[in-house]
Amino acid sequence: MVRSGELGRLVQVISLAPHRLNRALRPAWFFDRPAYGGIINDTGVHSIDQFLALADVSEAEIESSTIGCYGTEPEGFEDFAEITLRTPSVRGYCRVDWFTPDGLPTWGDGRLFLVGTDGTLELRKNLDIEGRTGSNHMFVANRDRTRHMDCSALPVTYFQDFITASRTRDLSKLPQDLVFTVCRMALEAQAGASRYIAEHHP
Image 1: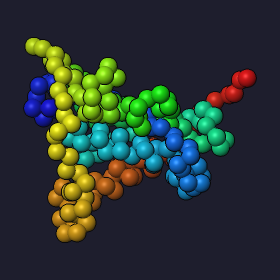
Image 2: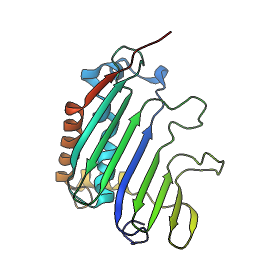
Image 3: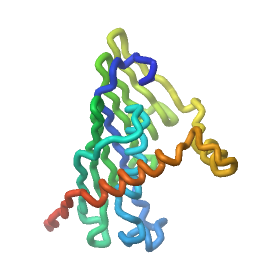
Image 4: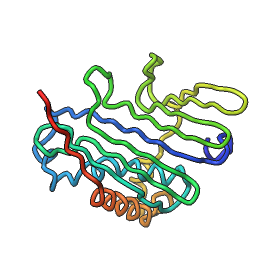
């Protein structure tokens, strides 16, 4: 959709990636920061990778990052983070957290927003909160119309591409340089983040 030009020139990518904590299913190391590496290294890395793909660039600048500890036990557990990215022409904002409410019938309400000069796109990755069944609901608005598209039947080749690359060392679809770049950016965002520890009130 981005490459088709329907949205015009891409201006901004916003990725919201809330996750359910599912505390009872987590091993002890999940809550040990030296073991889990911090929330941006854990989950934010995927949003960085996604931004590079949509902006069609091999690298971007981490403009700012923030990590919050809002009281999820144990004390100091990182349960919120946001990252602002930029290229010379595209802005990006990513938010990851562990605050998916138990009433939501999936592990998280992942959402992707694209703003272009001629249109906008929203992808509801896990569910349509208004009741359409399934996942990967796309909503597009451009100069001519609005529409909903069910993208759940579109092929997802990432996992097969990963297996193929591992077996054959053909990295044409999964360049090693890109993997290193995304991991480095996540490490830099994690290490350079400003930190916020919420005060608790009875």
